[in-house]
Length: 368
Image (cartoon, rainbow, N blue to C red; front, side, top):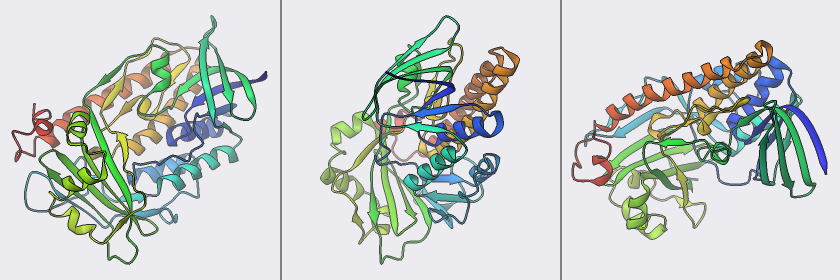
């Protein structure tokens, strides 16, 4: 059996995991290993970010992810038909965010992971049957099966859950997760070559939820319908024909993407619910990104929080090692909870702006 020892084991090779790993390498000089059960080939969504993400790239000393990167384009406008038939132009429904940007997620995620490797981090993909055991001294022993290298045992002083919105690691360790709603996104990527598609976001509400459409780099666009899982099941919105029927109810989104072609004959379905992981009683353990707290896409907080929480968690881990106490990790968890509470207040205010469909299950659930 192959065996390894590291200071910190991060589970999840997404932006949160990579950012946490880079921070630990740059600012704490820790031996860090990132593992993931995928090969990173799956479709990744969540493309909208604010300019604050570049401040964190500076902190991480990631110089190849900036406003001029080929996979990043600036939005020239944000228009919503939310609460009114009239267009509202704004930076964000949720915050006065200033400049916002669209990413090609696969390129962004890959670049961040390459930067982690470049500073001495290690990555192990295609891992299966991952099992975690915490020892009496609070360290961790992890067993997994790799697709090529077979059985592997990893010993780590700290364990980080960066497994995303489903928080697989936290759940496997018996930690609960408070779920605020059952929001899901059903969507696709489009080829818009030859179309005069402006570089702006468009949001439009309908009776059963709301639509999001935005141009992406490389003559692509994304269009997504956000609604609750039970509504998706009843209306069969995971099937293209029924999804297109719902799209036909829009006035502005369908007009904007007219003439485009989907890059796939299948729709993707992604969890978009608001959730918060409980403060953990486990020592030498912390959750980051969506595994710690996840947010409604209307907030545009997903990627920004993933990166920021990863950096702050890395600081907390380093401080915990130096001070030989769990207090920095507890302070980090309290900050996550307070952040989520503030988000919930704004979230409620935003949804209460839409009053045109008072008999709709989707909007009724968010009106109180």
